[in-house]
Length: 289
Figure 1 (cartoon, rainbow, N blue to C red):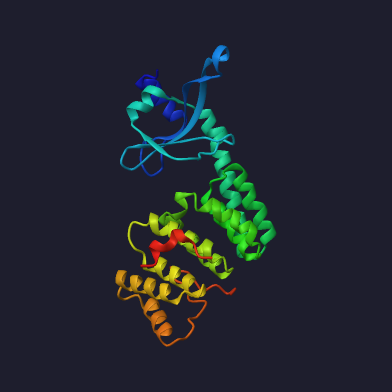
Figure 2 (cartoon, rainbow, N blue to C red; figure 1 turned 60 degrees about the vertical axis):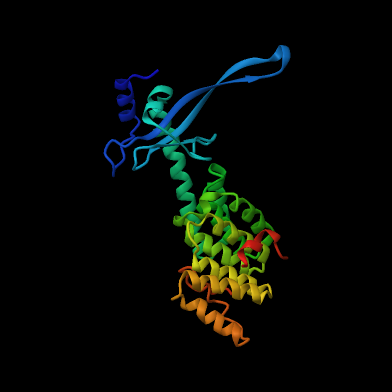
């Protein structure tokens, strides 16, 4: 049990003050869980000591994630009240300062180095740094996308497919803050003729979107077109125009299709610069109206 005075002191020692929100909680806490292991005569009760990373949201709720064995916050977030934190958790300032902060910093530095290597075409070095980051945090979004993009740039579709399967299982990969990365990843899948993967990837993004995104619909249409399914492509473009009647790229694409021509392969959508390098999935039927 933790009294209010001890909690305040622990919070201060743990360096939980956020620079933008005075006295916002941010740090590591510990709690104990009880469980049972074994069967019959070997059955016994055990207590497990768990470290969690706690960060206060702008609305005052507390976001909690467990630490992995490398002391990096991972997994599904859950939210608790300050009363629950005060009652069931103890502050762990030493763990936060000496374990968590260095581990999180190392992950970000590795990903930044990897991004720089990939931008410079140094793909072997990029792979090495992305893997360094993912050893510490296997769910790191930028690191996972970056590794997949590195494999696609090298034409290693088997390895890219392994990363693709990991990405589609991460809801956070399709958050607005990662939109540039997931657009780039989908486009690269298509340009490597991984059409089924590209469509499944875009379908996952569409299901998680809060509204119909005309750029996403446009890129799905391009994928169907390159699979030779022109009718489905046209229907997706119509949906994109319904979502945004001023979407010039979709209208131009439809005009080209109606003339029987072939659209510019570089003209992907989603706010991305054109890329200088230039099996049907039954789960995707709902995307083609």
